[in-house]
Image (cartoon, rainbow, N blue to C red):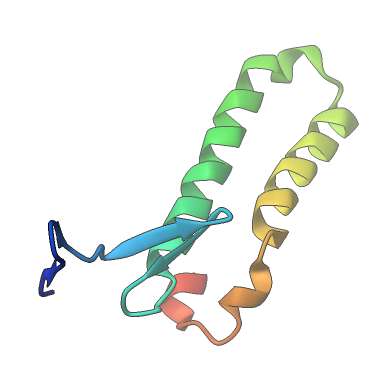
Length: 88
C-alpha cells in the first residue's frame, strides 16, 4: 500500500482496523475477525476451566453456552456470505 502524503505528515494505511469489536481487513474477507472471535472464545473457555470444579454440570454448561454464544452472535450478520474455510 502506498503512503498518503499530507502537508506535515505521512499516513500509511493499515491492513486491518477494529471498530465496535469487529475487525475488518483490507480485502473484506473477515478472516481477521473470525480469528479474533476464535481467540476470544478460547480465552473464555480457559478462564472457565479454573472454576469448573466448583460448579455443577448444568451450571457449567449454561456458562459455556452463554459466553460462547455471546461472542458468536455479536455482529454475526457481517459474516453472511464469507468463505466456507472461515466457517470451519
